[in-house]
Amino acid sequence: MTEALKAKLFHSLGVDGVYGRTGSYEAVVAGLTRCLDGLRPEAAEVFRFPPVMSRAQIERSGYLKSFPNLLGCMCALDQPEAQARVAAGTCTETADWTSLLSAGDLVLTPAACYPLYPILAARGGLSEGGVTCDVACECFRREPSTAMDRFQSFRMREFVRIGAAQDIVQFRQDWIARARALADDLGLPHKIDLASDPFFGRTGVLMANSQIEQALKFELLVPVISAERPTACMSFNYHQDHFGETWDLKTHDGALAHTGCVAFGMDRLAVALFATHGPDSTAWPLTLKARLDL
Ligand code: AMP
Ligand code: ZN
Image (cartoon, rainbow, N blue to C red; front, side):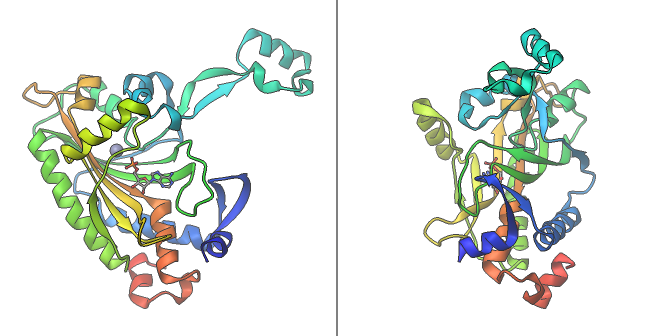
């Protein structure tokens, strides 16, 4: 069933977890996007990011300590030897042209909120009450899989709150309730659970345990492939002052800013809708089609 559905929604591009998308699939992603536009927090500032970001910024944010295995880096034929081959026109004749590549100054953005914090920090301290942002980005994570709910390239939308600790905790609480209401509207069976990020290596196990103990991450899980191992379609994250400290981002009274985000996996939500309601979106319940404006 999942293989048949996958074949209906996606075009193979020859690499696991990277797909061309069909029109009916994209119409559902557009419908979900409209739903989230309607739920955008009042006064949220909107940012739309490209699929690449500064390598220096991701290094500074500590991503490599936590998820080095997931990061993709842009490489190019930038170095003099490579340039010489390019100029001589022999580059394509090199059996292994990739040996001429060198790491560039870009990485593939792994989550939509990473590019936001340095922008806010560059503006100086936050005004009273903090700030709420609406961010979106096509993200990349190096986790190739044939599973229908795991991509290397996928879209992420987030509402991000930056301010005092108590504001962030409240924001996250409110959004867990709103996200559940949205999942109900969409007819998606779900549960909320404590979660941890897939931190890398042996110290990663300690980091994951500590994240769970401090209840820093929750996920909204939907049975997409199986009920036993439901799929995380949204996450609710409290980063404490990690990004405040990294970027020297301060609240109006000079304290380190705390941050949190609610992240919507647009592709996972779309796949969850098809898995739940069937492969033909024209046959979905009328109330659902109305909610998605299909
Ligand atoms: P995270 O930052 O890991 O909490 O990711 C935020 C959301 O992005 C998750 O709740 C998923 O819905 C989505 N997501 C994360 N990784 C993937 C992936 N490999 N494929 C598709 N969606 C993903
Ligand atoms: Zn985020």
